[in-house]
Image (cartoon, rainbow over all chains, first blue to last red; front, top):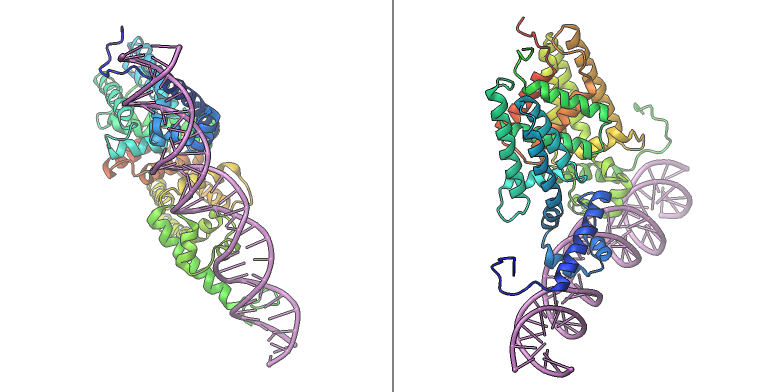
Length: 198
Length: 198
DNA sequence: GATAAAACGGAGGCTACCTCCGTACTGGTT
DNA sequence: AACCAGTACGGAGGTAGCCTCCGTTTTATC
């Protein structure tokens, strides 16, 4: 009993199998068809009935949050990498990139994330990851402001919004990469302090 | 026969009646429930069957484009108002505001607009309005660049993307007005030439 | 009025959502 | 090894929305 869990029963084998199969199928479908994909199709591909899917993940958001877990871990790994940069300006820029990639993991992801960020509903499993990345962004902004790279009027939350917007643009299949790059540059130019030629 | 039309038959009275009723009902529903509202509900409210709705407007986009017509006219009116400003910098800023309002007419409107802007499908009735506003934006940007207010690397299309993004944020119910205002300021600061203290 | 063209509308086939409950499986116990 | 209680399964089924097809009704014209 190395795992010092708090529930008495050991989790059943079929539960774990089904959960894993569901997560894998869901990831495939989210990648291929976006977050709006048919959950029935996911269940079928995982080889389970719809009832099983909904028992494991009562809402689409719950499934999404579970699938997103892996990506969240990647994001944390990136943070450590970014920390090694030292430069607060570069760090913020890198972080915004990382955020944008995270938000672009699946087409249509920004919508439910925004909904969660706004509603602050503790039952929504996407609320927590949202709050975490917003807080992290605030940290990066504060650090960059202290070194004078970022204007004082800029808030972390604003850059969170900016990043998720760009992710939305990307996912909306809207623009070519060149356009997106120019929009990103626009944002960077927007939050930077004017006398950054130092 | 003041109307010098080219078709022999006079348009039927019921056609005009139904079309008007559909447009009115659709506008109400789009305003209340966003662009994803149930078209069957719209038809029912207009007092017609689903078949009639789909004959008049074969796709959701067609209905949307027709309802949007009124707003487009408002936008044109704004353009004349803006032209009277004279100042290219102010004009661009005002234009971007007007654009954003236009894109925010209904919740969920940015998605189909983006889809149309990207696909350039001539069958999509939203493609034309999109192209028009993009062209107009390019004009404003060019004028502001000539007076030295806007950086040369900025393109009209980028600011179109920026405006539609902010509209998306707004429609996603995401942020309070204060946050949005800061994001707008970020964008303005982003496209402005640095030495704008002149 | 009569007539032919045009438009109507709702039934119906489809897909997806989500729930409920009889059945089957699993892990612990004897 | 067999049992048993608890747990999980899965699919049938009710709901909703999409869109189409075609028999019926309305309309403009003659």
